[in-house]
Length: 203
Image (tube, rainbow, N blue to C red; front, side, top):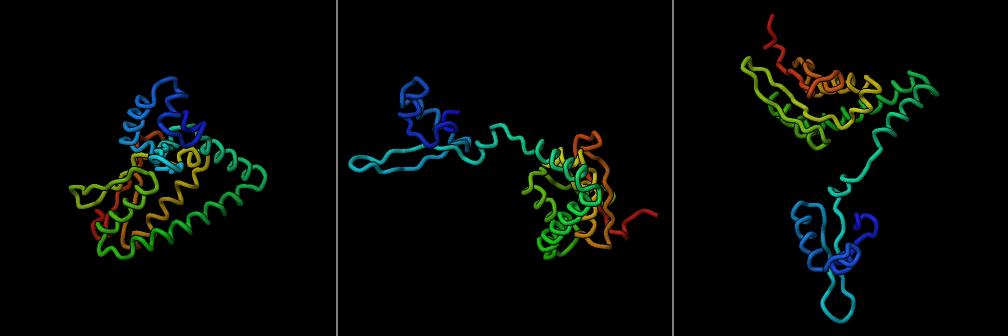
């Protein structure tokens, strides 16, 4: 909190603000650095040894309150009430098209379905979905998303979830069946998608 309020500080300056010694503050800073929450940078102040100044990392910034989810829901409500459902649908369609293009470019080099799903899971991980996939006994693949970083928006507007499923189907190809099984927005612990080549779909 002190670093958030005052910016980069030396261990001595931080110790003074916390009412402790600079060495005690430095020990805490080293521990926080090991957790990836702070980083140090040498700053020369003329004669003498450079001073180590400590600041928060991006990971640490996530520890502080963030109201972007509430803002997103508010904006969606404003679009819906002021511009109409059609305008909201257009916004979702634009986002869907942009996501599809980015995913297709990343997945295109994959040589087979398993590799395409692996590439898709990696993309979703990078976006915060905590995604993975497993191979099922029947030969299908199960894409698992343990977290939904846009859950508030998806809850306020189901169009995001519909668009997500459409993107998966488009990216994985016309010869692949993709079906959502579990759904966080509908009360599930996670979102899961059953994926199989159409020649493996049971009659």
